[in-house]
Length: 266
Picture 1 (cartoon, rainbow, N blue to C red):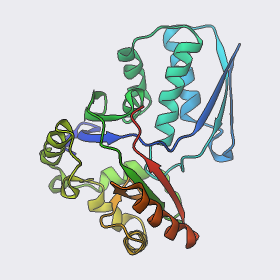
Picture 2 (picture 1 turned 135 degrees about the vertical axis):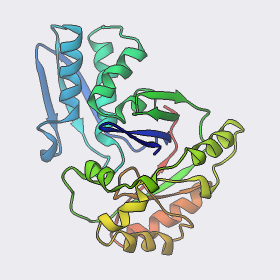
Picture 3 (picture 1 turned 45 degrees about the horizontal axis):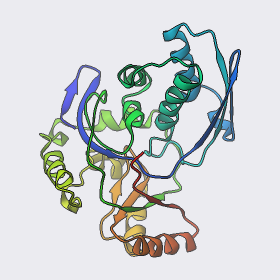
């Protein structure tokens, strides 16, 4: 996080997609219809907003029947809704034969949310400005991730509240990103000390008992624990899939919501 520009924060972040995913099915129709296996997401969903935005901006007279099957836990900082919105733009661009270039899809994606443009590209990328500038990077060396979703109540307007809790002293000059960029361009793994998420400065005071779950993940074998996005999902990364699998199994035996995932280049 580099600072604030009017209502937006200026960012410089390296973002990585993983193979944990939702499933979206699209069928051509006259209007836009939406179904979802999560009752709480059937109204005001980013999928329908993305479809409507694309339809209106291109004056397209076609529609689609869209079915969303959620697997990514929502509201925990993993960008599931944003990835679904980006997938909708990409899929309907093909289904409706619109032939919009990636640059135009990114422009529309930013209207839906500052982290949606990244998911148009996927893989490993540098995300800058307000989220609309996405630069693809060399792929992260094969990495395993263990995700732990603490059983905490969902918070309305969570990300906005998290941003409002940040202080000027929490912003950086982008030095962590520059070191990480150098490593990626040399094909090296990221050093733990360059993994920095500004929301960690406020998250452990914002989410009750989040520190407890950080310790649980460490006790299961994670050397370092990080916050995913605006949280409260926590994660650790591993060079060896076997080690990640062992940590995942220990968490699963405790009845915790956890996921084993791998870096994904798109």
